[in-house]
Image 1 (cartoon, rainbow, N blue to C red):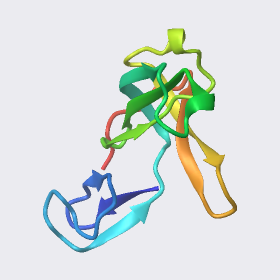
Image 2: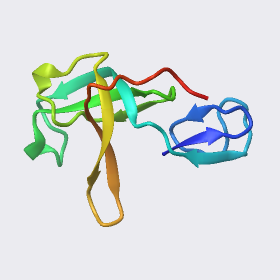
Image 3: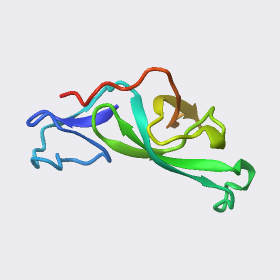
Image 4: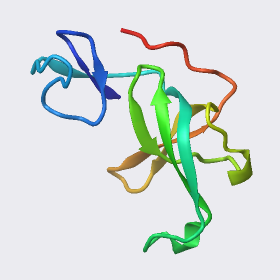
Length: 116
């Protein structure tokens, strides 16, 4: 789910109390497709503290079909197979009983163009 302005129908990410496009406070959380495209990525071989057991790992920017860009990671994909423009779909990793992180995996279903 991401936020969408009811006034101008603009989707946006990161979450905030008002629309960054028209400044309306009439916003809502909206279920979205979960489909996107890899905009850019990097593969980390020297880990940040706390990620020593995860190397190599990737950090990716993903353009969602709804037109927003978010940072995440691509899972179920060897580093050598990562490509800019690769179609991906969201999966969730439960890290606790209350928290699930959105990550992405390669898919054969390319996202449709921006809606709304």
